[in-house]
Image (cartoon, rainbow, N blue to C red):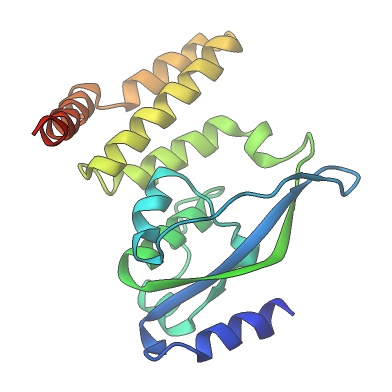
Length: 193
């Protein structure tokens, strides 16, 4: 059903060669199959790249990828063990159009052994490296600050102070602060007049 629905959506588009991928709704379920969350994906298809920089909201198993786009971008990067899907989706959305199918086509099961829980430091480092490629874009700056603060708080809470120090060492704080302050100044100027 997923594949046929996504192909039907693709066939409805005039310029199919510009579409790099199609993704759809998904649900988070628990160990017993109970629905924990149904992420709300309301966004402008023209801003998929910008939204992905802010948060990885696409479940990779819900994605259908255009083979020519995949080959053009040289596929999955060998540099990432956990976030290869996020890297590929960012590259696809930056170079190609993405389409959203408003149907549930995949489920993500939450359990104690999820890699995002058991190997969060490696995930953090990979997410950080991926987003840093798009620095100094303002959206990337905001996400880098957000990721750094989140992982710093987790490391301190777990009393992993060496990890917390390593997080601080990765963040180009002065550059991030300058970009965030500049963005805020522009917003305030627009709001005032």
